[in-house]
Image 1 (cartoon, rainbow, N blue to C red):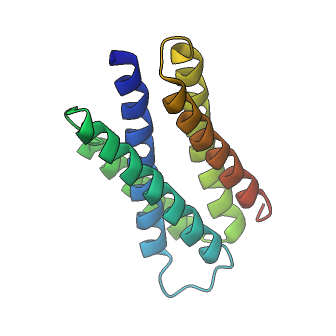
Image 2 (image 1 turned 45 degrees about the vertical axis):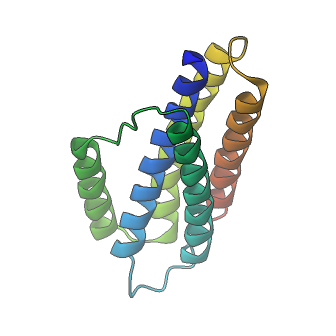
Length: 145
């Protein structure tokens, strides 16, 4: 089903970009004593699990995996480097992540609404689980503001 694959592809790409962004951020924070690091590592592990799961499902369906564009990754990396250089406080990092996670959450909500009636209920459940995780990540970050 086309709709199943489109929803899975969205979640695959979102989890890939989030994984890349958090890994980049953690590399920029190496050697610093930010309290936010443990929560970032935990969130990264969850995103990696979602990423692997979505990737496996798409491969099983023989869907060609579309990676995040190099331009998006370069833009993300430069933004992180600049933001960390200007202010590497936990509050600033949490603010940056909340903005990114919120965009992901809104995109996921839109996709769930768009595909809710045509998509396999198992995939809708996965999408809702992914959405709930994204919302929890935002809540985790709020304590650092």
